Image (cartoon, rainbow, N blue to C red):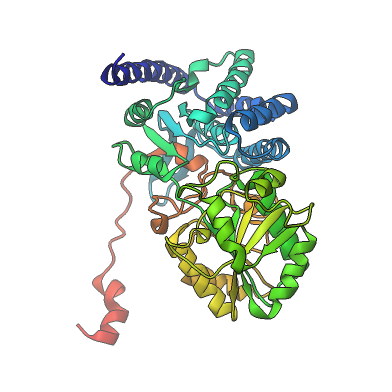
Length: 473
């Protein structure tokens, strides 16, 4: 089969999947009720959270992608799904959700139709599950396009979901995937045929989603920077940064990539960090790390998302640091395309910048975000809350995470108010249409019944009175 025939065959395959998805979705909506939508969402949630299935998915994900570690993926699959189900438990996504006599408007929540979800290999079970649960909660069908390395995990997840659906008499065609072999042509066909595209993953996929002609919700790149100021609880900050940096071997887009430390507590902070398992690499030795981390201009697959011992061996650092080292903290000053340590590293490597004071730290962090990761998030460890507010007013970011382990906080935690999600919108700074965590609201739409009410037309004086008093007519 030549390339042109392969594309045509793949497109035809997607068309057949979409026909089944639309048929299933129409039946789902015709029978629709809040109880039905909730039951379907819970079925998908239990499919990934049931402990034996969760472990099988985590083990398969690490085996087939080579990214992360099993224990943390089990935790991620469990907590992300549990948190999402908590968030949506009392949310109304079916029928009349508001009826306002004052405005004369009644709002009815409606499904979007068929969701096309493009998902990454870094979270090959948790991200599809999150999208699937949100889609079903809103009365939709969904077709998932996994990355090539994520196909096996997605297949297993869907088999578990379909097993739960069978118990309830739900149509398995409500949840489908693009089968192997995946291809850009198949993913493109899905995006063009779906009613809404949800895209998490590479910036190439994000660009394609946003230009496919279908309304798309896509998210930007992460490159998290965290400031540690002179008022911080250094032991607490070091413990949280270590736990966050090492979780699932730094596969998360919310994993710290750089830390900016105020000069007066710089040495004390790194003493605290070393007690947690961080090894400080002086700037004089940074070139060797860079050469091995980017041997051909691309991230070294023997380093990214690997356990500490494998990472250290690949970097030639296994005999240069303590045997219990969990991650490397590499001193640097450079920021920008010619300084790769200032970007995302997808590994247990943290770039370290020294700042004269908080103002200098803020300026350094802004430069890093301007280089990569604008809009996503930034963190600060401090006892001065006004500094976090100042960062929120001044910096190109949608989230300022205060005194928390960034990986666990950005995408929702049981100890903060963010919605549980694996996809963070980055606003105009990141080229996204949303500035929130992807959530159920992006999987539904509404119809408004609009009735005539008594006129509320104001007099000109009511609108312009204060302006005329200052500027005249």
